[in-house]
Image 1: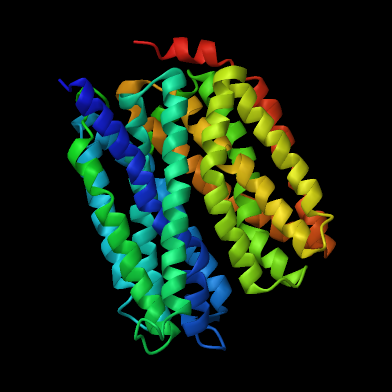
Image 2: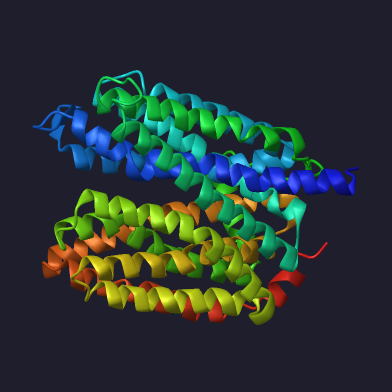
Length: 424
């Protein structure tokens, strides 16, 4: 039995893990590795399975493949963690695997090996988040879960921003640090990122505690097991409605994040320095904004607060479709920062209230699946709209529908009924 002091330490360690793994999100997923991968890829494309694939397309395929693999294995991993009380060991294994793969990005120079290591690292990152998120139900409920989830997201934005700033300082100041060129500095940045992830995860390994094992739970091994689980989920209508709402509005959020940089560069002609500066501003501004949004949730209610952030996102997409200047892009970045962390942190705590606490890892695997498909579906829809209309701005404007439909679905979720459905 944990003492009150140990519970507080566990909560702080859980929040610190967001600081730890956000380094991977900012440096490897978003800002540095994609650029480095494109720089080392052959100009004519990458030869793979008898075909020559453009570097940007090959990178997109690699990201999609890692997300698809996680989506396929997530329910089985969650079921395994709940049945045997293995959330912390599996989280530890994911972190060590992902962090070592990240540090190993410094070794190869060929794009195929680099893509393979990224695939392993991204699976460790995404699968680890299943078990990390599942600990939320062990640590807090209700308004306390809102605050804890928001604190973790806030620390994540700060940690990810600092890690990214450190890596870019290495790259841009490589001569000062005695490094021969930016390529060497970039590879050292991957070592720093992996070490950051592993080092700041240690408190979670020490202080997080498992709930009781659920050996009576049925295994998830075969397609028939997955069909059985699907039928079982139909008994949680509010949870399913929330997952669909989250899929849609998170789709819009992830698409805005994914296409912001290329839109600013290709459509508006903004410099890399301007785009990077705005990205760092979002990281640091999102920290206090997330904490403020959590406080608003205690006054307005969590559901209303999330819906308010989605209304702001809908307005952001309309604004983005009309902007032309550098100042307007910075204003857009500030607006995104104000609602980005709050919408995601409160969505996580809302979902935690709708799931059986004794099956938290299994049910958070579906949260992970929803997030991963959002990262694939939104950019795909955006690309199709550009193909059909020939306009980036029309495609951006169409993203408004993701937020409007998501809000309508969320409005129909009865969280009181959903919580009663899973009450012990």
